[in-house]
Image (tube, one colour):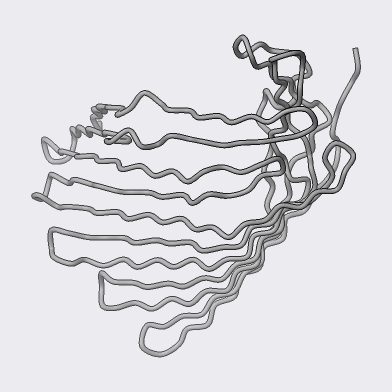
Length: 262
């Protein structure tokens, strides 16, 4: 029977500066303010049974996240097909939204979402892209950063932090003019949350695309998580409970898309 609403004006300034150096070198700096809005069910106040041991409930008082992002980067081009970039960044998230667990009743956990406080990310990101041969192009990306989340939970101040990293490796093979194949691998390192931590995960995907009839007809075959490694593991603890969860999707996932351009 309660009424909830948000009626406000917000502004999102963006500043980008770049300086062109000799020999295909470039320096860039930027500041942006962003918003991350909540999902629909995050606001539902109703109790929903997920399974025999878990219920969930949204939070109609939830506020969106606001992110302040500061970035400083350097980019170097090598010829027509090669590029290297290095970027340092510092990001602050206000109204940090976290999934929170608590005891609902004996052997049943309640999952909800809360604005717990702030988080901070200070990191270094690099990317390298090149064409090794006419038929093989690669992209390598890496991210090394320090993460910290702090705020109030169960009426107590908390702080949790970790050093972690992630990486992505893309391969594009040009078999012929109308046939391309991609193979990519992704890794996400372990990280902390307001109540616990998430474990590392990695996955390998592949795709092949074939064009027909002067590129009017195309068929793309995708295979996601070829080796079934995209398992998600996380743990959390609080007053009167400790939980460990492991989710394994049914993979590999095969998808065929056919499109025709008029």
